[in-house]
Amino acid sequence: MSYNPYNSSTPPRPFRIVFGFVIAVAGLIGGMTGAVHEFHKASVMQGEPVEMDWQTLVDEGYGDNPHIRLVNVTVIDPYVDMDELLEDEDLDALMDDPLVRSHVHPDIGPANVVPIGSDEFEVESRVFIAQGEHFLDEAFRQVDETNSVTGMVSTYGVAQMVADFVSFCTGNEVQGPPEDDDVYYTIVPIDGTPDLGFARNLFLTAGFALALGLILCGSGGPGIWCCWYAPLPSVLSLIGYPMRYGRGSWSTRITYIAGGAMLMGYGFYLLVPMGNFGSTDGNPIFHAFGFAALFVGLGGILAVPFQITTRALCVSVEVQPKKKPVRMSWNQACSMEPVIQEVEYTDPPLVPSGALPLSGELKQKAEALAAAGFNEADPLQWQRETGIAAAAIQLGCQSMVVTDLEYNNDADLVECGLISVLGTGLPIITVSANSSVKQNRPSAKCLFQRASTSDPTEMLAEHLEVTVQEAEQRDTIVVEFDESETHDVVRLARRVLAEIQGTMDGQIVNVGPMRYGRFHYPPAPVPEFVAASC
Image 1 (cartoon, rainbow, N blue to C red):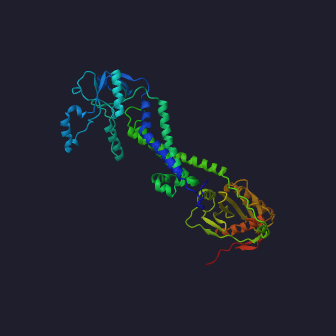
Image 2: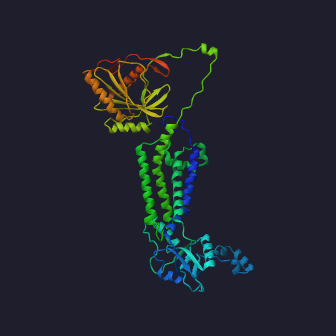
Image 3: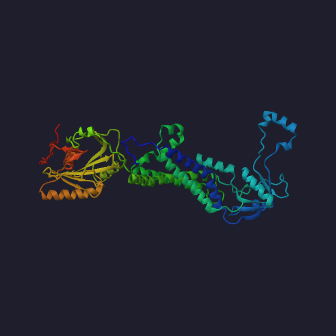
């Protein structure tokens, strides 16, 4: 169902908001904490690991391949078991002292890697296992089985990574990994070579989950209960408000595309130049935020084709509900008044729409006409018994053509009419291909035609061709309108259209004579325009 700004019955869609929020958060967390790092590791760890001993790594470094197998080494357990250091009574007495207990930490730092047979207190601490219980368990398993540790090595410590990211956020210089001789190596134990294809698919899956989740969340409208019970998803859904339910002109869509492209560019900047993604000594903190910016920007770009496609699809398959036939009793049928009644045609009020601006397709067509030389359209409203219809009136083509744009609430489309008047007073009216106007009566009081298109800028060629031909055949002129006469010209044309249609809302319409400034119905020669004197 497309959006109708003049109809407040469009229902909220809280399920979309909550479901899209869950997908987006899952993609964001999964991507920032796992997928982007697995993709980075798989990108730099292709091929077989390079074997080297502890001393070679410390003296010469790991070269261009961070995928190494450090042989003839053991891992020192960094966790201290207090029960093994003290007797039970001494341990209880020690831990009863709150001052002492607050300074006792069983974790004393990262696990140190040393050569087999060496004294851990005499060997310089230069090689460590990455912090994390699962990394430590994997390192112990490898050492127990092969007396070696296989994984990805880096000189970029966690503390330096955090410091660099903080420096970047505060505008200070990013140091990067140390380059002097006294460097420290951190190994992330990995059993086997990571599957690059699987890591790439995981990265893209998490990214598209984030992008599509944001699109789905932004496409729904929160109701009162959704705002109360799910405030965070409701607030997040506001990112899609400008294009929700079919809103938004091409300027809005271009803004989404430009903003998304900027975010994607910034995400790429964080991933590659700043985070060294896909190369040695990458910074996973930059990778995480680069991933988020990259796919949030992608969501902003993809929102535009999704909105255009889904709106067109909804319009094409939308079916109006059929009304059930009403059965009447014999007495009701006999007492009914005639089905078709005759009514006098009256001009519906045309008033400014106040604070409600032009929007959607109506705004697009008005802007297209303004680009073709017509004046800027002011938002108007036709006020009828059946409801209010948004409208726009413009003057152009050397002040010889008046355009009448109206939003059809029932059909969810914009109908267009082009109006010119000959010097004899004969109106020439061209309606768009999607117009609901049908000529049921022949009439010599106007010249009516239906265009082959609904684009007002393309309708102009057909309208002007007929107007010029009729003026030449009748040896008359095409009247030039003053801007103050545009409303009179539109009212004249609508009275003429009521005459040729014959019926309105199932009632026969009697169209009487009427004067609109210097224009008359039935047609009469048009005098020259005289500006009102002060």
